[in-house]
Amino acid sequence: MAHALVVDDEADAAEMMAALIATKGFTVATAGSLKDARRQLALQEPDVVLLDLVLPDGSGMQLVEDAKALGNTEVVLITGHASLDTSIQALRLGAADYLVKPVNMKQLSGILSRLIKPSALQAEASDLMLELERDGHFGQLWGRSPAMRKVYEQILRVSGTGVTVFITGESGCGKEVVASTVHDLSRRRNRPFLAVNCGAISPHLMESEIFGHEKGSFTGADRQHQGFFERACGGTLFLDEITEMPLDLQVKLLRVLESGTYMRVGSTQIQETDVRIIAATNRSPQEAVRAGKLREDLLYRLNVFPVHLPPLRDRLEDVPLIAEHFLDEISRREGQVKRFAPQALQRLGDYRWPGNVRELRNIVHRAYVMAPDSIIVDECLPETDGDSPATSMDGAPLLQIRVGTPLADVERQVTLATLEYCGRHKERTAATLGVSLKTLYNRLKDYATVPSRVDGEGNEAPPPSSVASDHV
Image 1 (spheres, rainbow, N blue to C red):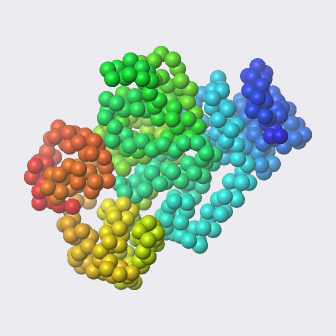
Image 2 (image 1 turned 135 degrees about the vertical axis):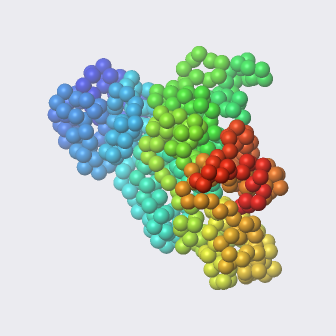
């Protein structure tokens, strides 16, 4: 039978938690001080220690290393309030999670149901690293480059904790795959992983989709609706394109992160949630804050553990490995095995991949279809002038941007130039840029209200309608 130790100098709170823990099939001991806790640790090694940080004879942090030294003991911190400092402290100490007083019983039950011995997590991490060296992949992520090895180390560091993760990176880099990998390696792996593209949901419906609504709360609400927080209970909620979430809804998301509670649309009843948040954006978070697209306080609350996913051009040594992985996938699906000729792999490795991994996957699929036999040669790849840096894999000229251009202006120029290149076909433009159609519409609406800028030589930059010559 699993054993728990509750360390809290508030006797009533300790006894309440002990009673709940006992109903989950644990034996439970309590301690009101560091001295008592050390005695309990010596008497019986617990599977989990719920540790108050403020004790009469010192800080609970002094006990963390004692508990972790036992080898198979999880530590859950108990704090008086949720804050960025608390999250960072829990992560630094290697705590599995933390609880805020008054303890949310739903969250406590969830933590108890997700206990995994640290030794098991360490063994799993070792197996993943062996697979990386042998096969070139880390879970669902592929590549052995130094840039990706840094990402893998970050995933291993954060996946065993309950803290919030904020993933940044260009469109097409695989941010959702990173989020899914964190979930798969976490203690929440047996509960749902839900991915939500905030740019693909109408702002008028987003609150209902995320928090749910009551029957009759608005026109058309003919039944109660469970939002993403309810459906992801006990698991992970991935909020992609977080900068597309309306500011008033960002306030409510911040409240959930701080209190673990929310209300359905049209309800006055508080709901408790036990969900881990992973957020992502393809924008610079700081630029988004300055542009009024992301609340600064929400950024601080999300950015507990930042993970930056490098663009494919910064890890070109991974291209052959990823390309062959995609080719193996489509070969199994289609029932005919095909392989790249060495020259074709070399050509893929020489390209800069502005569309990142998503573009590589599409090119590999196209090459598979174009290859008349089992060997994919250069002729199966899209036409390109290999000596010209102004041409992309699909023959489209590249947009040249001056060094030092603000990122917001870069995004605007690339978006508008891509729109022109796609013949102002918005669905094709959104697919090329790797964003939702709703996100594209929102950006075009924003650009229409932005005045023309003046360049460094005092010349007015061309308006959006005149960018037809600047293609991507």
